Image (tube, rainbow, N blue to C red):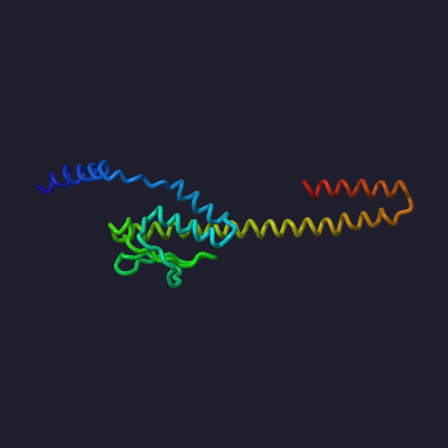
Length: 181
């Protein structure tokens, strides 16, 4: 009886539930794109709304509230709630009653929440690195323009020799082209 149950009934029950309930397959690509869009969003309100949307699509909780800060995802109330950590402008959230209230949050959900928060943290860190690089490059370009081009143009301005003035201006244009490139 156990063998028949294990080999026939349980697989048949799973197949039947899949056909009857028609659960949509998880779309990992859409989740990844949603997390990247959170990192690319400029306003904290938009980031918060997109994060809530990702969590709703993944876990389908009945309720999402702001929670006390935590450093990593954790289960609360014996699986009735899942708490996600705060990241940058996004506060810690408490998700209650998974899958529309039909299930408890499981250790697999906890691991998935950990993966999602790690992805979001990586996106935020990548964006911060990019912005630091852009700011550094802008500062370098401003310094090059001020130091090189400014000095050469001042030399051309104060030069009385027309040929020398033309040479300074050509050098300045060449330097400007190299900086822009």
